[in-house]
Length: 129
Image (cartoon, rainbow, N blue to C red; front, side, top):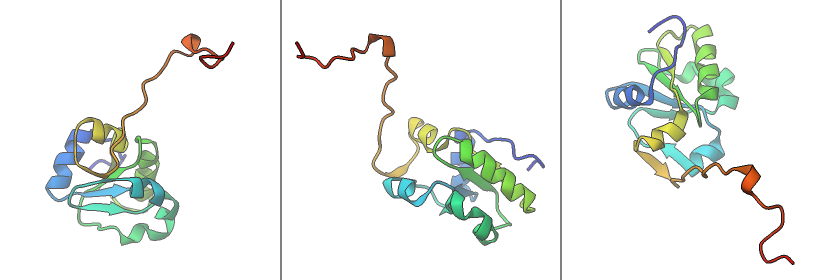
C-alpha cells in the first residue's frame, strides 16, 4: 500500500474483505447497532476510541477503514498511518454507498430520503384555511 492512505472504491473493499482484509468500521456504537457491515473480517472500533485502542488492530493484514459516508474513514486512516500502520486505506462512500451497491449488511436497511425542492414546499400545512 502507498504511504498516503488514498481511498479505495467500495467494490474493491468488498472483494478484499472477502479475501482476508480487515474491514474496520469506525462508526459509533449506536450507528453500528442500527446497521452493520456483514462480511468476514469486520471489526468495530469507534472513532472516539481509536487513539486509545488502535494497537489492537492486526498489522499483518490490509485494513480498510469504513464509516457512514467516507468522511471519518479518511481521518482515521491518516491517524493509523501516522502510528506506523502501512497497510491501511479509507473506503470511499461508507456504509451508504456499500448498501447502494447491494453489499451485505445486518440490521435495518433504509433508503436515503429523496432531496426535495425547497421552493416547492408550502409553509402552510394542507387543510389550513
